[in-house]
Image 1 (cartoon, rainbow, N blue to C red):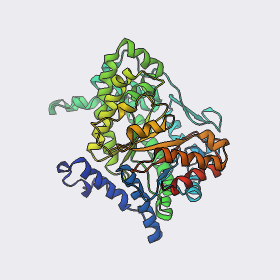
Image 2: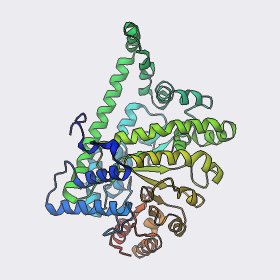
Image 3: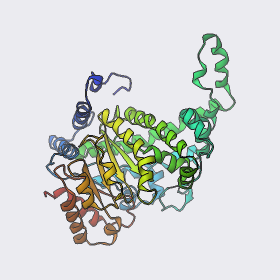
Length: 451
């Protein structure tokens, strides 16, 4: 499909309400554009899986409970790869994806781990990965620091794109340093001045720097070509659909996770709270725009949010209401308006947040919520009938429990939490010690549960 060709899905888009827009995205998800199915039965299996997900999201009782397995580096372990091999060897990583899909048959595709060669080519400074600062069998990790300084809020708020390009990204990796010399495109206001304004694009190292970034982009395409073939195999041969369009973050988490860091943002909440609020508000349209652009060509309408610093242990309920929820809700509303489905993974305890996130400004059935350390009966009381809700199977249980214990836990979890909208079961990412038989039991029991 040409990136520049008109997309019939968007014809008359401005005349549609959010539900009509979402229905078009659902139809695209079901249509499996470009998938070459090995048989009619595989195509029907693909569509059954997507229908179950759509029914769960829209608070209808699905034919069966869709089960999503968020396995990350478990793919490597299951195929006998080290984490370094999984990140560097695209072919073997893709083969591990295929093996996992064949053996476990989840209801959505698993995702490959990040490509280490891209990190390496960018000379990333804010992460370590196996073979680069970490042992070969250790997952890649962030190096938390104050990459954005405490006195730089005004620059970020005034011009986020310019601030990222000129100040922040060069701190992330040396490959981003040359583009910092590019002159602002807003200089091009007058024809007679264009010859002078263009001179900045001949800055020493700029051309070579852009070529370096182009080479990194080429590496990304090489990774996507190999792992994308595994995804095509999952869809066409096994009938397993893609799960999500893109990932997003709460605006506060953009600041707290990567820019200011945990310590920096906590100090800022006391010293310059108004700057946090203004910066978070500045990120709202940027986050919506990024997700809408990526969702324009993707098959699935789901946008995944990994929620971090809004958990009970990171801030008070008052601070959650002030700093975290308003801008997160604004992003969610913006995506819902465009027919996208926010999929919220609340990592950590959200027991003190449930009444807040059951917000009547978000239409019932417009988002789904997943929890891992929150009281699930309380989740059902608060969100049941309002949103599709999902729970996590503890990774420790998958590692040291018996198959019977896993089956009982999953059954109890579903009995407690499932609503008329169904349930999406999702395990965590730290699966180094998981047993294959326990993971299979989790998927099989969830998928066969009828309630």
